Amino acid sequence: MSAITRLFSFGDSNESEDRRLRKVVEGVNAFRHQTARMTEEELRGRTAMLRARGARRATNTALRDEAAPEVHDEGTQNRNRTQAVDRA
View 1: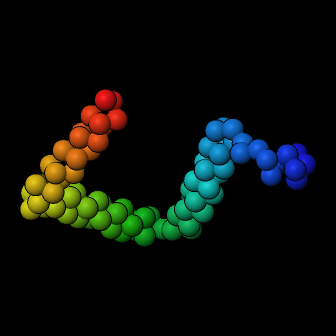
View 2 (view 1 turned 180 degrees about the horizontal axis):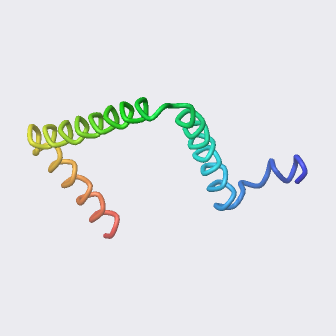
View 3 (view 1 turned 90 degrees about the horizontal axis):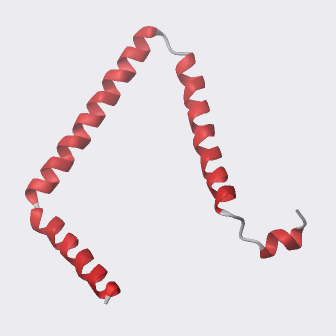
């Protein structure tokens, strides 16, 4: 593809999706190489740490929703109003 063609073409959605997925694959491969060098005990520790992190995120999300339901509801109401205006 010439420089002029690349300059004036935005690429199709497949090309942009391909670029996005290549970055994901590179990250997965890097992670795979890191974990391949770990011992069973290190992997168990890593698993426990990731599970704890996931539990904290779930707890934080639940606490946030419980502490400020009106903020969440207000955002939903505003989004619904905007969609209604767009349809009119």
